[in-house]
Length: 183
Image (cartoon, rainbow, N blue to C red; front, side):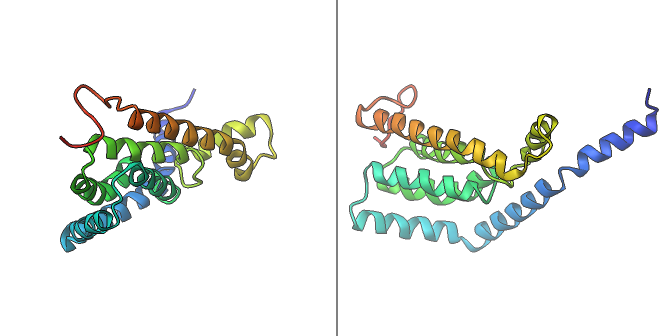
């Protein structure tokens, strides 16, 4: 049986494993603070909306762009709420000016985020999963884990995008009284 000092050591080890996550959150917080201080998010959203309207980009392709951008950025910023905190001040006002409902914008973001979050090497739980894999095969490395998970990420991306596309073209509500476009 372990004594109290061992329990404290185990807690310290568990907290120590979060140091990389805390560093990422620190930089996200700095980025968010600079965004609000400079108002660059507002500038990007207004000019982005003007650009989208000037090229008449108001259809599903715009939402697909949100899916792709969030899928790619999730490979670099693993915190779903942190990434949404960065992207929402840009995407939501910009796409609302184009006519999309915030629920549709967030759904597009969640599809992109959810599909690639399982393959990013920066995911905090990647090491835990790799540890479980190594219990069965000591030779497994991070590349094995990502290559085994990649087909699932692609399947999730394609399937959820197709379902989203179906909802869009069949005009199925996203929730009670919530459609893709603002009324």
